Amino acid sequence: MFGKKKIAAAVMAAFCVTAFAASGFAEEQSETPEAKTVVTVGNETLSDREMLQLLQSSANGNIMMVGLMLTQSTLADRTEMANQMADTMLFAEGARLDGLTEREDIAFKLKWQRIQLLVEAYINERSQKWDMSEKAMKDYYNSHKDEFVQAEGAHVRHILTNTESGATDAILDIYKNKDFVKTAAKFSRDTTTAARGGDLGWVEKGMMPEPLASEIEKAQLKSLSAPVKTDLGWHVFEVLERRPAKQLTFDEARNEVAQRLQMYYIDEDLKALREKLGVQVNEEALENLAGIPAAPSEEPKLELPEENAAPASGDVTPQETEPAQQDAAKK
Image (tube, rainbow, N blue to C red; front, side, top):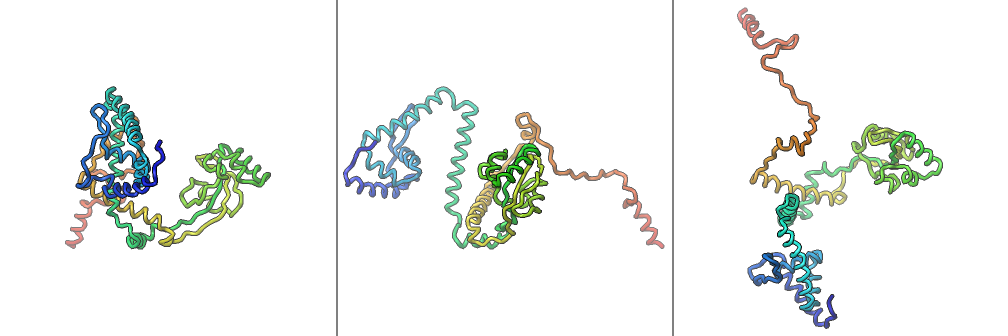
């Protein structure tokens, strides 16, 4: 797209990059020159600043790349880029003229994209104030050590079939060919793990459905299991190794510490925003969402006794005890 330039252009590139960085490129500064309209399509316009932001976005945020590209671009090159952006704007204006922006599904997508962009911008802005220093991370780790424990686990590989006979066939195939990996690829309907020889990775307590979880817990190492039935189907598994529970050191948990500390700051922001703005959820509207009733809650309801209910056998009401207590006091 761009023709060859003299070496002087490369020298100028450094100046351009510095100029972009100094001007902020993304944020307006008081000394930044007034924006100039580059493209006009109907009532929509695109300024030079907006064009630079689009170029920066297409270069994955690499300001240096944009600077180098611009130093090598002729006026004709830049006009071509502007016309390509104009083509996109023309389609958008065509959609508006056809009334597509008023269509419910399109309006919702525009609304939700706006929300997502604002969320990203807000978190990026707020994250500049988060203390993610080594000291802050170590302080969080030391006060939340119980969150950074490697649970006891077993390294398991398995084969899942629809029937018990299918599981038995898989066992026979393993005994015959001495290759669990190939048998898993051949028999297992768990396509995710079949592609890697049935490897489930490290399985911690509570991760697997019963009775598979219990069978894994008591299985011998590197011993092929009998078929085990769950709601998913029939399993054949092998425990390759076990690991005990242990406290992770700060260095071992560093990445998770950083993630949890970031989530702490996000949660604090959410609490403050909820308190400031308030949140209302219309449960009545959710009860029959899309005409589908909500599933019944599995939590048992606490049934309080009625005020006038008769006392259970052997129980004595307060009214019955008072006269007896009064008589005893008189005596």
